[in-house]
Image 1 (cartoon, rainbow, N blue to C red):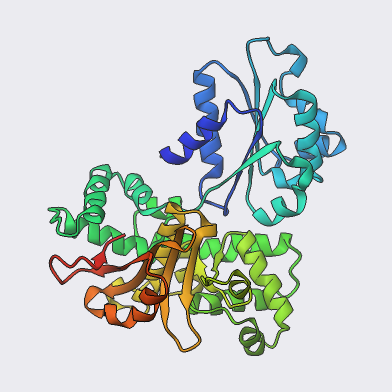
Image 2 (cartoon, rainbow, N blue to C red; image 1 turned 120 degrees about the vertical axis):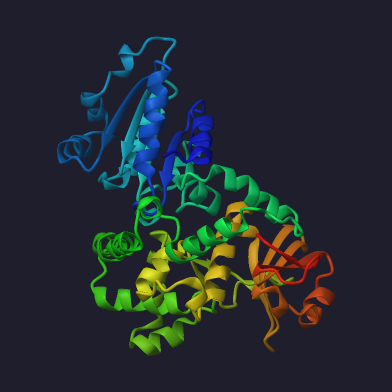
Length: 410
């Protein structure tokens, strides 16, 4: 199954001399994606080689010297003048010094050589890809499937058009509403990891998500040198239970009997391994913004629910509002630059879930309510008066007020 948007963005970068670096969580299909890219290059009669640094013999060779990579490919000197040599490297972060490895190859062989590399964890990419690669790489971040990709993987491409119409037109009455709602409920509970989406039964989905927690998250913990593995997972479960809430490291430290600095380090690791994301507050005063607590969101609802071991049907859940808000964060991150995405909250508890600053102190604001009758515009008077250039809308799953202009689907 092809992630067409992701594949298109990678294809568009092939003509550029810079290395193409693909990062994201484990098990979201990065290897499949670059293999599909390799197939496309082969169809175009390009010179392409696929290597993985999980192969110990290849890894040992390149750790001895970067140019040993050509033991497994054509030599750059043998590449015809009208061709380029494409080398696709899976799990590049396993190299002893990936930054120097890639820098040497770029400086010596570009533009004849084009490297396309994947890395499972931004944690290692950040540590290894130092400033020496400035101007020599473009990093593409990929996440679990968005809802439209989810529908594509389900073989429901026709529903994507219907869903888009439902977003654009509040009064649009789709004949496929029941089917879309059922699939959306599944997406909110089981998330967008490709193998989970394609699994036939709920039991298979649950087993796969538990495996993501018990094996792949543990692999990240092991490779990061975390010594208190149990505490790390206790923290992850606490965060899952506090999705969309303010992040208070001191409170978490008291609960787990850990230093707040350790809590901060563990959450940083969770960010860099694509488990969670932090959303910073919006204020007119940037200095204020940098000193206030962020909110916590997960990159995938399914992984979040696996940490809680809760796969109950959506309508039976007390946390369905949190799941919808977490989905909204995922969707907004898809639509907007993360640097422009915030939330708004005052000391006396006034809050707007999401603020998108499209221009300086101007843009969109979204409040998430499971049912649109819960949205009371008068509650947001302080925000509207303080920021009149932000258009406030409610995002909801259940629309009951026909023709309401405040409530929209996202």
